[in-house]
Image 1 (cartoon, rainbow, N blue to C red):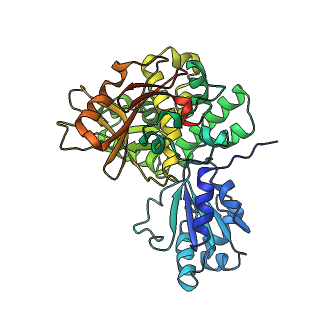
Image 2: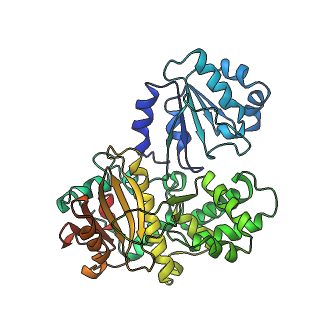
Image 3: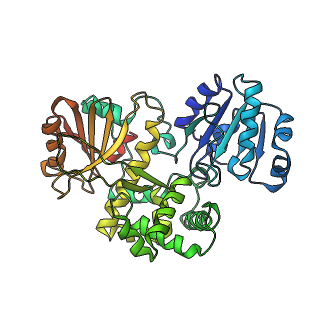
Length: 410
């Protein structure tokens, strides 16, 4: 029997739906959106199923009007006109708890105007985190705890993984179905490969010809996840031109499999790189696309570091959508590479910093960039963490701590 996991988004979804007429829940395909939204719906319409979509294609207003409410319109982008029907219905009757929509695409590429502005409130759902898998949904998120500069707020779970264990977790991914069904390694590998294949040949909107080019592009992005490669690096590796690469960047962002973390800007730090840091949203997709398992990842030190960084990002990203601190994420790197910090969380004018290290015993050298940030920003710097693969929590320097990665969910 499949396990059920509580999600960070569930509480927020329920609270908003109690006060608003329509909620749009977006995120990667198979991330659990339908499961969460269907808890609040009386009627579920799967618009990616032709038989159910037919009436909505013919006359979305009429089809919508006869559905017992609350109505869940699953994968709304398959029948884009349904969005306008929802908007028109809300204009006539705006009471709370009427419509839920889920979508795996940001918007219809052909749509000139977004019909939901001011009528439909959007929230995000990401992959399943380790906190969600272990049922630790209560309490502050990692960035909020780090900002208090108190190492006693972190706990190391009894089954703390070692270095190999972290890669195993990363390559198992955060898609609820294979985790809930406890798929074998072979079945999981096939599921993930099928996901990537369908994503690149069917789900990506506007991909009309030669999917092999998109596949080469996606592979290049996987090899550079958690990095700041120039656009030329990616399109040269993929064998495409700059214009096509820009389109592909946008398409992968539109289906929520490519995420960008903007560069931090400060007049206190000179010559900062302005390139965004790009992440594949789930490290399991990296392994599936490249055909690499734990052993192969561990044998490639550069890719191992990127997979670990991507795994950490996949744990922290979903917390931000429900955390009262509403921190924004950035990365920092100066032009000559003297100073580089994987992630910065900013709330107001206060900063926390995170470095991800594939080391079981970090030292002051691993914290030197965080120390630079502390000295540069002064009181604006709350605390820094060197996230590592060992078991220990300890202070490396003033307001800088070595914290095991698993303490994010411990």
